[in-house]
Picture 1 (spheres, rainbow, N blue to C red):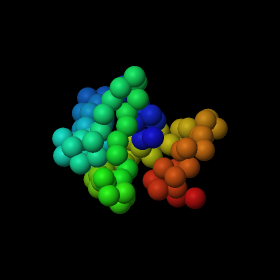
Picture 2: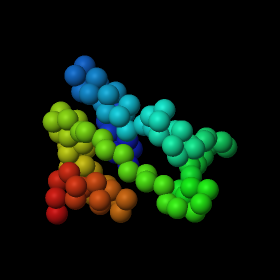
Picture 3: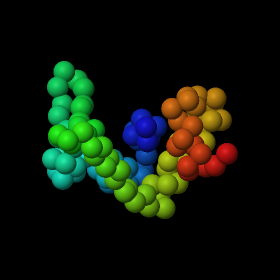
Picture 4: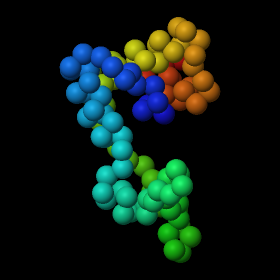
Amino acid sequence: MIGNILPQEGDFVTLKVLRNLKMDLSFSEAETKKWSIVSSDGRVDWRLFTDKNKPIDQEAEIEVGVKAKDIIVKALAELNEKKKLREEHLTLYERFIGE
């Protein structure tokens, strides 16, 4: 969801921060292997369970720096101000801005 609200343009510093944030939000080599991530027909799929039907831990910790957080907060605030927030943005909004 964060990737969908980030600005596509800005100053040099903003673009560098955005590039790093997008890389942090993408799958790592280890996650690709751990979750058997595959892409086909425009879809991305991964395993939710082991071969013994046990859930696979899918959490990944992503550190969001101060500048990246400011960019995310600004994007969410602008969506809210323009009344363009969608239901799928609510969790992000609550996490980054609050109720």
